[in-house]
Structures are given as C-alpha cells and as structure tokens.
Amino acid sequence: AGPTDATESGAQTAPDGPGAGDSTTSGGDDGAPSVASRVDRRLFVYPILVVLAFFVARGVATKGVDTFVPVFITDVYGYSLTGFGVHLGPASLASFYFSALLGATAVVQLVAGVLTDRYDHRAVIVGFFSLAGVGLWVLSTVRLSPVALLAVLFVVGAGIWGSNPARDALI
Image 1 (cartoon, rainbow, N blue to C red):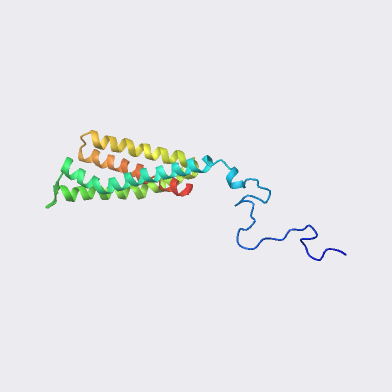
Image 2 (image 1 turned 45 degrees about the horizontal axis):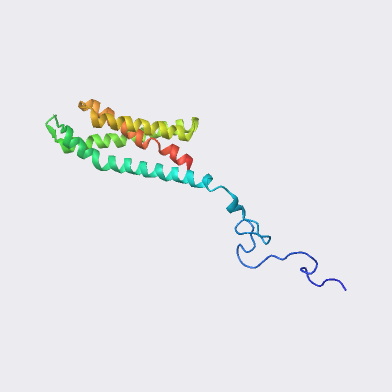
C-alpha cells in the first residue's frame, strides 16, 4: 500500500502561524544558526550609531542657534539702527539678523540640492557642517561690524541648514 498523506511520502508541510519555521528568523530544524545570527552586527550597529550622532549634533546646533543667537547678538553686539525716523533697538535688530539668517537658509538649500545631486551626500554634509563650524568660531571669537555680522550669520545658517538636502537624500 502507498503512502496516504504528504508527510509519509517525505514532503514537508508548512508549519502554522506567522514566521513559524522561517529559517531566517530562527534556527532551522537541524540546529544551525539563523542567517540573522550569522551576520556581523557591526555592519548595522556602527552605521546606526553614526546616524544617531549626526542627528544629535545637528539637533544641538540647530536648537542652540535658534535659541541663543538672538540673545547673543543683543547682549554681545547690542547694535541699534536709526534711519528715516525709525529707531530699531538691539532686540529688533537682533530679530532682523536672525530673520536674515533663516532667509539665507532657503536660498542655500537650493544650491545645496544641486551639490547633493553632483557629489557624494556625505561629503556635502561634512562640507556644510565644516562651514557652520568656521562660522560659529568666527562669531564667538571675532568682534564683527554690522555688515560682517550679517555675512557670518549667513555662513552659519548656510552651514547648519544647508545640509538638509544631503541628509534627506541619505534617508
């Protein structure tokens, strides 16, 4: 008499339940390790740590500039402007400088998008962060004229927010 079901004939039936018997998620029936346990974890852990460090550094830089640059400009520089019968005090002028910084980022992101398309995304991010670092260093160590302050804030904004297209391309 011949076999009456598939298991007696040597064919295997699929186990019940999601992922049951999947050799990529658990060890096979022969006790061999799964594919996931054979892969070197460093291939995944180190890149994730680099991405985490990038977002933490970018978050600190962005929120620090958002929070402290207007106060820094008011307290350290204290520039005011009077013209055409209008007086802008230090706080108002600091708000203007910060608005110019944010406005510059909109223009720079268009240029950064072109750079991201032409060059390696990681190199673009490093370049813009280097630019931001130089701008922040100059801002914190050099006494600047009102026009030079505006130029340095443009550089800082370009450096910090110019990396957005490259960051988005990597994600």
